[in-house]
Image (cartoon, rainbow, N blue to C red; front, side, top):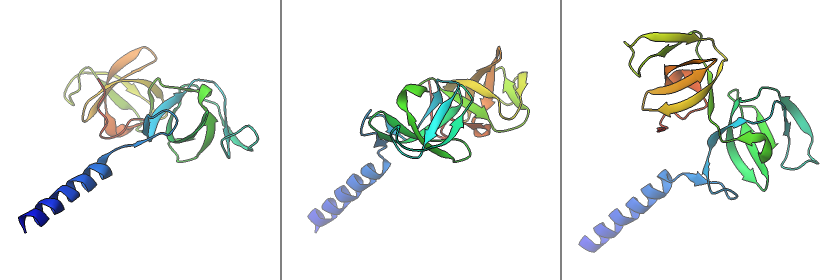
Length: 164
């Protein structure tokens, strides 16, 4: 009987570990989904992963954060903060992390504390370079301003993501 219980516990542990393991891209072996940014000022978003597929639209905002959801050869399926997406050639993407401010007049604080001095306020839609992130705060820099912002007001970083 003890053997059956032990076997059941071990099976549950294996299943739990597998369900928490991050999916990996078949080409890069990097986690999926993951955030990147646009390297180019213009990026064609295609219906499928090749030049023969129709262009659905064109992103025209350098440094815009995108989320990679799939990989196929030199192509990455991406989506933007509105959930729209398609296939983009990997050479047009960068590993440099950026975020979009999703709250109007988001306060940048001197330290990752709500009662610290506010160094600047960022308008909704501003793209900022992403630095360190703790549980609730991320360090940002935009237009010469630098400070800490509430992570929940940003798109382009996972809510549970920690960055050093």
